[in-house]
Length: 399
Image (tube, rainbow, N blue to C red; front, top):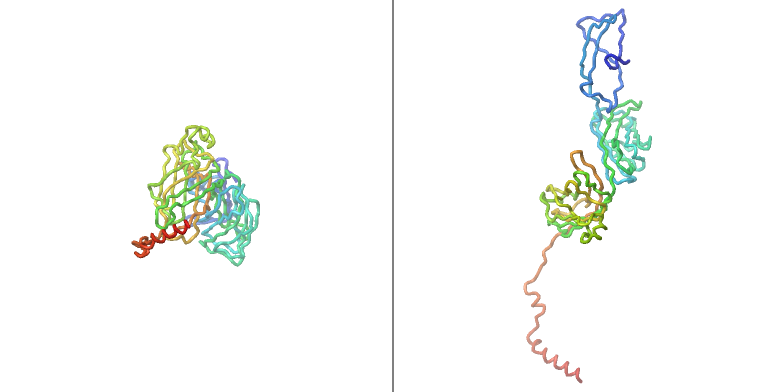
C-alpha cells in the first residue's frame, strides 16, 4: 500500500487479538519486497525506513530515519572487445564475470547489449570457468542467454568467461550500457549488474607503419602514414593522435624526430591547398601541436585547442627505441584518433590491427687491412712483360 501522508509504500502486519507481545522481549518478522532498478534507487538521504505499532488508531511505538540498504551487484563484470569498427560482423566480445553468490547448476546468464547491437551464437565458446556443455540461445536481437550445465554449479567467487559474436552498429548508441543477469533455474534473480560501460563505435583508419632503421636496440625513425576517415572537429577540445607499439618498444618522454605533416605536402599554392581541404595559407600542423611520450610503448600527439584534422592523408614521423630482442608474439601496432578532455575520452577512428615490421641484428662489417692492394697486386716480372705484350698486340692489329 501507499501512504499519501508520508509518501512511502508500507506493509501492515496484523497480530492475533488473542496473542500478546511481552515487554522487554525481542521479536522478528520477515516480508518480501521487490527491489527497484538501479536507476530508480533513491538517493541516500531519501533511502530511509520507518516502523510503528498502532492499536485502535493510536501509535504506541515509532521509529523513523532507519537507514536503508544499497543494492548489490555482481562483483566484477568486464566486457573485452577487439574491433570497434562500425558495422563489423563476427566481432568477438568476451564477458568476464565474478559473482559473490552461489550459482546453481542449470542457471542462466543473460547478457543484454545496447539496442543497436546484434548478437549471434555462432562460434560461441566458454573461455574458462564453465563446462563445454554450456548452451547459447538468442532471445532478442540484442539479448543472449547462456544456460549452465545442471552438473556444473559454481561456488561463490568463481570467475568465468564467455566469448560470443556480435555485430557493431553504425554509430555509438546513446544508451551505451551493457547488463548481465544471473538467474536461477526457476528464473529467480541470483545476481545482476547494470550499466556496464560500453565502447565507442569508430570508423577504421588506414595506417601503415614503416621503420627506417629496424635493428635491435637501436633508435628507429618511424614513418606512420594514415588516412583519417572522420574529421576531428576543431570545436572539440583535446584532439589527439595515439600510437600503441608492441611491448618492448619505448618512446622517450621528450619526443625526438617528431614531425606531423600532410603526406603530399600540397600547401605551396592556393590551388594545391584547396585540394587538401584546408584554406589557402593554412600551415599544418598548427602552432602549439605537441608530442608526449611516457617511457613506454605509447606516444600521444595533441593538437592545440581550436584545431582539428580534415579527412586526408597524413604522415607522422617520430623516433622509437627498438627492443633488444625479437618479439615473441605478434608484431601488431594500434593507432587511434580521439578527443580527451574533462568530459572524458571518446575514440573517433581506430585501427587495432596494424602490421608492424621485422627487426634484424646490426652486424659490423668485417674488413681486411690491405686486402684491396693484395687482390690487385701483380708480380714484378708481370709488370715488366706487360708493355711488351701491349706493343705486340698493337703491331698484330695493324697487320
